[in-house]
Length: 149
Image (cartoon, rainbow, N blue to C red):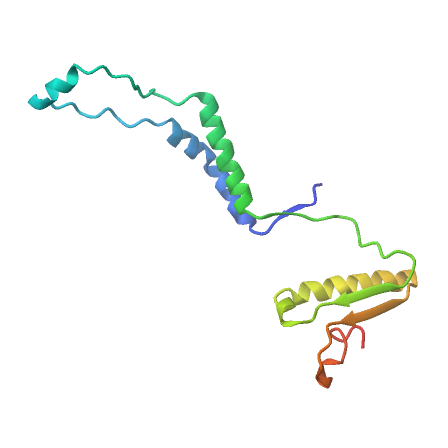
Protein backbone atom coordinates (compact mmCIF):
# COMPACT_ATOMS: atom_id res chain seq x y z
CA UNK A 1 0.00 0.00 0.00
CA UNK A 2 1.31 3.42 -0.93
CA UNK A 3 2.02 5.86 1.89
CA UNK A 4 0.09 8.55 0.01
CA UNK A 5 -2.59 10.54 1.78
CA UNK A 6 -4.58 13.64 0.93
CA UNK A 7 -5.29 16.70 3.04
CA UNK A 8 -8.68 17.14 1.34
CA UNK A 9 -9.67 13.70 0.02
CA UNK A 10 -13.27 14.73 -0.69
CA UNK A 11 -11.98 16.81 -3.64
CA UNK A 12 -11.06 13.53 -5.35
CA UNK A 13 -14.79 13.01 -5.92
CA UNK A 14 -14.43 15.58 -8.70
CA UNK A 15 -12.56 12.91 -10.69
CA UNK A 16 -15.98 11.38 -11.30
CA UNK A 17 -16.80 14.51 -13.30
CA UNK A 18 -14.11 13.78 -15.92
CA UNK A 19 -16.63 12.12 -18.30
CA UNK A 20 -18.76 15.27 -18.10
CA UNK A 21 -15.70 17.38 -18.86
CA UNK A 22 -14.90 15.09 -21.81
CA UNK A 23 -18.47 15.50 -23.11
CA UNK A 24 -18.24 19.30 -22.76
CA UNK A 25 -14.93 19.37 -24.61
CA UNK A 26 -16.40 17.35 -27.48
CA UNK A 27 -19.57 19.40 -27.61
CA UNK A 28 -19.71 21.94 -30.40
CA UNK A 29 -22.12 24.83 -30.37
CA UNK A 30 -24.84 24.88 -33.04
CA UNK A 31 -24.11 26.78 -36.23
CA UNK A 32 -25.22 30.39 -36.07
CA UNK A 33 -28.20 31.35 -38.16
CA UNK A 34 -27.24 33.21 -41.31
CA UNK A 35 -28.99 36.51 -42.02
CA UNK A 36 -28.34 38.35 -45.28
CA UNK A 37 -27.43 41.99 -44.83
CA UNK A 38 -26.69 43.90 -48.05
CA UNK A 39 -23.44 45.63 -46.98
CA UNK A 40 -21.98 42.24 -46.08
CA UNK A 41 -22.10 41.13 -49.74
CA UNK A 42 -18.73 42.86 -50.17
CA UNK A 43 -17.31 40.61 -47.48
CA UNK A 44 -18.44 37.46 -49.28
CA UNK A 45 -15.81 37.98 -51.97
CA UNK A 46 -12.97 37.84 -49.43
CA UNK A 47 -11.24 34.48 -49.22
CA UNK A 48 -11.58 32.83 -45.86
CA UNK A 49 -8.25 31.40 -44.72
CA UNK A 50 -9.17 30.42 -41.18
CA UNK A 51 -11.45 27.45 -40.57
CA UNK A 52 -12.64 26.06 -37.28
CA UNK A 53 -12.60 22.26 -37.05
CA UNK A 54 -15.84 20.58 -36.11
CA UNK A 55 -14.18 18.61 -33.30
CA UNK A 56 -10.89 18.95 -31.46
CA UNK A 57 -8.26 16.27 -32.14
CA UNK A 58 -8.35 13.27 -29.80
CA UNK A 59 -4.87 13.98 -28.43
CA UNK A 60 -5.84 17.53 -27.48
CA UNK A 61 -8.97 16.30 -25.69
CA UNK A 62 -6.87 13.69 -23.88
CA UNK A 63 -4.33 16.33 -22.87
CA UNK A 64 -7.09 18.58 -21.52
CA UNK A 65 -8.60 15.70 -19.53
CA UNK A 66 -5.18 14.80 -18.14
CA UNK A 67 -4.58 18.39 -17.07
CA UNK A 68 -8.02 18.51 -15.41
CA UNK A 69 -7.28 15.27 -13.53
CA UNK A 70 -3.88 16.55 -12.39
CA UNK A 71 -5.46 19.80 -11.22
CA UNK A 72 -8.08 17.88 -9.21
CA UNK A 73 -5.40 15.70 -7.60
CA UNK A 74 -3.24 18.74 -6.82
CA UNK A 75 -6.20 20.49 -5.18
CA UNK A 76 -6.74 17.43 -2.98
CA UNK A 77 -3.33 18.10 -1.38
CA UNK A 78 -1.32 14.90 -1.77
CA UNK A 79 1.12 14.17 1.06
CA UNK A 80 3.74 11.43 0.93
CA UNK A 81 4.16 9.90 4.38
CA UNK A 82 6.81 7.38 5.25
CA UNK A 83 5.45 4.16 6.67
CA UNK A 84 8.66 3.41 8.59
CA UNK A 85 8.82 4.19 12.30
CA UNK A 86 11.27 6.83 13.46
CA UNK A 87 14.77 5.42 13.88
CA UNK A 88 16.30 6.74 17.09
CA UNK A 89 19.87 5.48 16.64
CA UNK A 90 22.22 4.13 19.32
CA UNK A 91 23.40 7.09 21.39
CA UNK A 92 21.60 9.70 23.42
CA UNK A 93 18.38 10.86 21.80
CA UNK A 94 17.88 14.62 21.70
CA UNK A 95 14.23 15.61 21.49
CA UNK A 96 13.78 19.31 20.90
CA UNK A 97 10.25 20.67 20.61
CA UNK A 98 9.16 24.11 19.47
CA UNK A 99 6.54 25.17 21.98
CA UNK A 100 6.09 28.72 20.74
CA UNK A 101 2.84 30.27 19.59
CA UNK A 102 3.52 29.33 15.96
CA UNK A 103 3.33 25.63 16.82
CA UNK A 104 -0.07 25.92 18.54
CA UNK A 105 -1.98 24.93 15.41
CA UNK A 106 -0.34 21.49 15.20
CA UNK A 107 0.43 21.07 18.89
CA UNK A 108 -1.55 17.84 19.36
CA UNK A 109 0.17 16.22 16.37
CA UNK A 110 3.61 17.35 17.61
CA UNK A 111 2.85 16.11 21.11
CA UNK A 112 1.72 12.73 19.74
CA UNK A 113 4.87 12.39 17.62
CA UNK A 114 7.06 13.30 20.62
CA UNK A 115 5.28 10.73 22.79
CA UNK A 116 5.78 8.06 20.11
CA UNK A 117 9.49 8.85 19.89
CA UNK A 118 9.80 8.80 23.69
CA UNK A 119 7.98 5.46 23.90
CA UNK A 120 10.25 3.95 21.24
CA UNK A 121 13.35 5.22 23.06
CA UNK A 122 12.05 3.94 26.42
CA UNK A 123 11.43 0.46 24.99
CA UNK A 124 14.96 0.42 23.59
CA UNK A 125 16.41 1.62 26.91
CA UNK A 126 17.88 4.66 25.21
CA UNK A 127 18.64 7.82 27.24
CA UNK A 128 16.71 10.92 26.16
CA UNK A 129 17.52 14.59 26.56
CA UNK A 130 14.55 16.93 26.07
CA UNK A 131 14.60 20.58 25.25
CA UNK A 132 12.18 23.26 24.27
CA UNK A 133 12.11 26.91 23.39
CA UNK A 134 12.54 28.49 26.79
CA UNK A 135 11.16 31.84 27.80
CA UNK A 136 12.71 34.25 30.25
CA UNK A 137 9.64 33.98 32.53
CA UNK A 138 9.87 31.24 35.19
CA UNK A 139 6.34 29.88 34.60
CA UNK A 140 7.48 28.57 31.19
CA UNK A 141 10.27 26.42 32.64
CA UNK A 142 8.02 23.39 33.30
CA UNK A 143 9.24 21.46 30.25
CA UNK A 144 7.61 20.24 27.04
CA UNK A 145 3.95 19.82 27.81
CA UNK A 146 4.90 17.85 30.93
CA UNK A 147 6.79 15.11 29.02
CA UNK A 148 10.30 16.23 29.99
CA UNK A 149 9.80 18.00 33.30
